[in-house]
Amino acid sequence: MNVVALMIGRGGSSLKDKNILPVLGAPLLHWAAGAARRSRHVERFYVSSDCPRILETAGEAGYKPIERPAALATATAQSSDAVRHAFEIMERDGPIDILVVQHANVGTISEAQIDACIDLLLANPAATAVVPAHQQPDYHPMRAKRLRPDGSLESLIQESGVSANRQDLPTCFFFDHSFWVLRGRRAVFDPEGQQPWPCMGSHILPFETQGCRDVHDLEDLKTTADWIVENNIPRPSFGTPAID
Image (cartoon, rainbow, N blue to C red; front, top):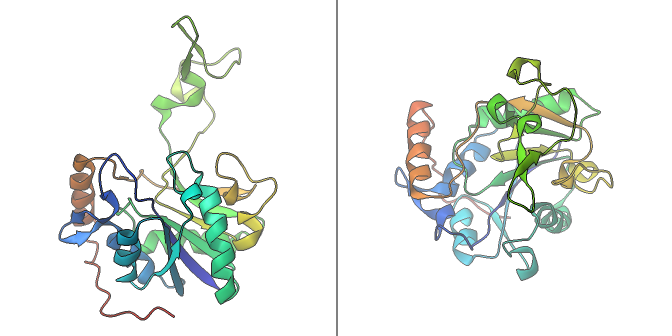
């Protein structure tokens, strides 16, 4: 199998340079890169960004740069479009059977998680993707409300007989967005891919976790560092990796 990692991250953020801020002495995105580099499966590595500093920092981990067009780097740009843009470029270097999409602002992942998701995808030929996901029954969408124009609330999902008891509601998952494992072109360009991330395809399997800690503020950097220490994650070390 040809397994490829793609890290995605924009330069613009409410927390300046969040993807490359130090966590335990290493840039945040290096922790994600380290997990992929230690994977049993991943063989090629790429990074898509509009930010030269992100491209350079990921390059230190052996990730080949893909300059993202400005239209795909706005605050409203869709991640699936960025993945599809990069996929066309990466395929020029060879076929891609499985694509591991990594988010540059998440350092709370391990190679064991990546490899387990890849193994699960390989074991389920019908699946288009395996995505780390967690349950949050207190925030089940069937209990959610939305705002009416007059400022009052109404049920987000209009369905009668919804129980107030969490255990009576159907099992619901929320994606971690730490990384996604996609079945190559079949998933990424699936015309029936599930919204709002159609690049995952139409048959997505969950890999259950306790959630991740994606970084949006300085406190998230601390919780990321705590998780890394608690889980004995090796410090990222890349030497001088070559980028073909």
